[in-house]
Length: 332
Image 1 (tube, helix red, strand yellow):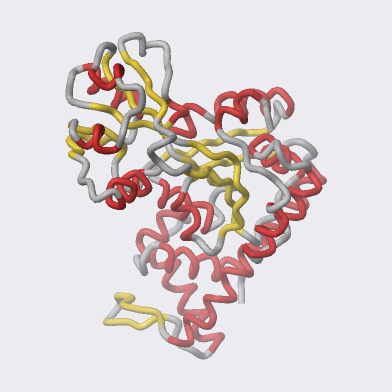
Image 2 (image 1 turned 180 degrees about the vertical axis):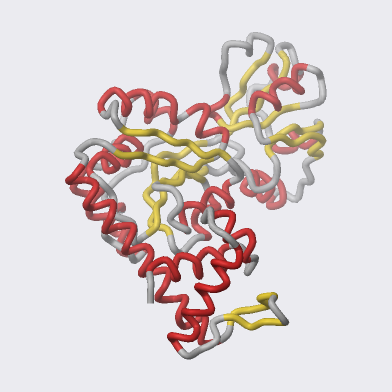
């Protein structure tokens, strides 16, 4: 049995049993992948895949049993290499982060600027996309860390640590009727066309549930992935914007009024997550500490090595997760 065969097997499964896609990912040939998997099946004396002619149609019961160990073994191999690299190339390596556009634009720049000043020889990689896809990258051990809101809790493979709490702001053109109200209600918002994030992005599910719980149906007329795009269409008179507080101000926002909406919506939480079996290098711990500065390094290391969610929650119960503003002001 060769490690290469296990990598081929893992790639085929991750590519929905498409051998050509797996071969392309691994920079090898499709016949080569098929041949190595056939050799592995012969050595193990089982059929890992079910077939219709040459096409793979499913995973056999024996295949599922083998795959449980393959994933763990490949993760351990990766951890061994990372641990060795930490000693052979001190403070050299890479830090890969998967996240949404909002975090990449409004949270990471300041943190990664400080980080790169401390670790100038570390190669920084930021992957942007929808939260589910980004969490999947971390769950499959393809990136070091993921930053995301509610979606991250759907992935049992990830260890998560709260970074900060955030809420929402209402954005309207200056002079809009909502700016004259002493306190805006959900009913006030529901009376206007609403512009906000697409489903699955930046706490959208909590926003929708809040209106539902109040027996109100928001008139969402425009959705986007990018806060700046939402603001642009608010300026054009499409309606009232609801955006993350991290994105409330920018150099081109003089035409807009921003109204705090934290009395209307429950807080959302940004968490940093990583695959539970992943080896974390010293320089990567520093990134974790920058994302969760309310925790001391010893506590962070304890959380990293605590798999059970209840046990992590017990450790975190002694700490108060800062709001976005507190994180920004260093007040935690």
